[in-house]
Image (cartoon, rainbow over the protein chains, first blue to last red):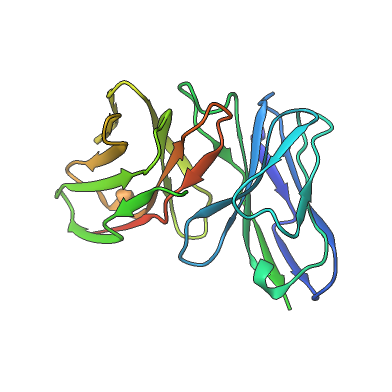
Length: 115
Length: 110
């Protein structure tokens, strides 16, 4: 099993550009989330999904869009990149909504720099 | 609202013990703990459900006080490999949305 796969691993964008961060999991997990982690800080929830076709906002959703057309994929779109979006982005999945004995499996992260 | 972790940082010698605390202002369904090494993704350690249970993982265990909305992570006889940043995540509604604390950096020295 590959687990949670994120691409690309590194990306440099110019202010105003748009891009999509890819996230795919092969564990048939229903629950997927996107977090950002600024240097020396914790994880901030951007968007999450409890299943295909269902998404909702987290703590810091502005400037980001998501969709969940399949169970496996949960892409994150940056609409118009800003320097404040420079961060490490983690995708995570779980077999349920963390109300039982399952935690998150995290992808390896995408390191994004906006110049 | 994100949970509050304490302390922010702790330095230990091999073999010493440490306690990391996580508290929330909201009623919690569950608390989960992760360890992150520098430049890597967080790795799941354990999850605790409401009910005040305690769990163990190697020499790492945790407790969850549902009434106080607090969880503690106990690291006993610490090893060099325990170094890293520890995060607690909390779930406070049945949608399962999880928020994380800012982390506790643990450094274990020889």
